[in-house]
Image (cartoon, rainbow, N blue to C red):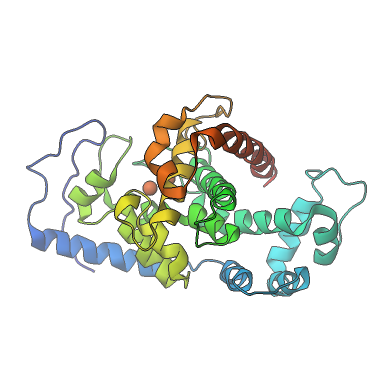
Length: 309
Ligand SMILES: [Fe+2]
Ligand SMILES: [Fe+2]
């Protein structure tokens, strides 16, 4: 581990690039090395998620296949059953097993809870240099973008991802910030952007997310769009999927999900705000209102999951 002192990043918001900030490529190389070491120190992501992704790529799979995967992790099963019994899903009787949970609350709900629980430990961090709400904002933003990406991929026939894969790509799109936050140095607790990240450590959260996801054995179908969620136009061959992510995160941002408490799903969003993304994903202006309505409904349901975990 190098003992190099870290350069101070430029002021974090609404600032011009600070030309006096680290310009020495050697310094960046050393910090980059430290960042990459930190990636290796990250706890591994729950293997259940990786196995879910492998299953959903298969031509045929059943609820029992998912049950078998979940049951490999008994701690996860215990938490799932606790959440399934918390009154969230309006059932008349209690749930005692995963097969029962599949029948009573549905496989899709169960999978959402698995994703929420699996990501909670790693993603419930309070990031110092980003403007998420201190009360679990980063994790809530991640889950919301996952949910929105899933809904959008269902209405976008051009998407090469299964809706479930889109969910996971949204869930993990900003994971690079978890590592970078520790390297942005002292400074205003505000909103770092990719430029600030580049100035401070020589790489941004998109590039870093690609490395983290590779380490976690997340397939390239998800890693590719994540790497390009801020520059989908140059994201071939993942341009469409990256545009879906860009649209999903943009809509969640407009509603303040993960940034404001309470957030506001009733806020109007004009389609012109996202015309570039809509063109790439093949979404017409006439479809916008219905898509936004679906997003509101599904994010509203997700809120109930947050409040019960
Ligand atoms: Fe984001
Ligand atoms: Fe991002």
